[in-house]
Image (cartoon, rainbow, N blue to C red; front, side, top):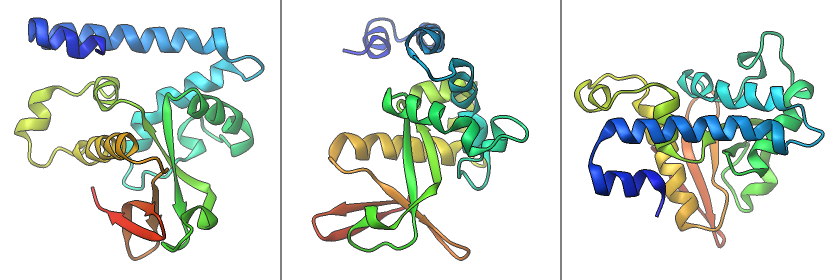
Length: 186
């Protein structure tokens, strides 16, 4: 059983959960330099720490310049690949069409990155539970909800969700199930 869940069952203390989450983030960030091999660990850390900012934008598409001013794909693509391969972040590609097969329509230069665990995302953003529960217009509810839905979809299906976005509309997640494409709005 994950450490946070076990702590909640035993103590029901949000402060203990917060402490565990902070320790986990520190462990992950320290491990970047130990296990990154030839990939620049500083860039991995910069990408990881930019996720809250990336998701807070109205257009959650990953923007290299949000990691570092003047940032470009060539500066961060290896770091992103490493952190996605390590399972710390989930990459969701935009597709040009919601047709079968979805992967054939991936826009490889347009994607969103989500944290593998919604509780850790909440902690990284410094969100208090009362803000989520009591404020109807709380802006970060959308990214938290999308992150949670992605976490559930990845746990239930063996396919990678995509998203569809153009000038007129957005589908938060699209899944390919056999020959069918299933849209999902967060």
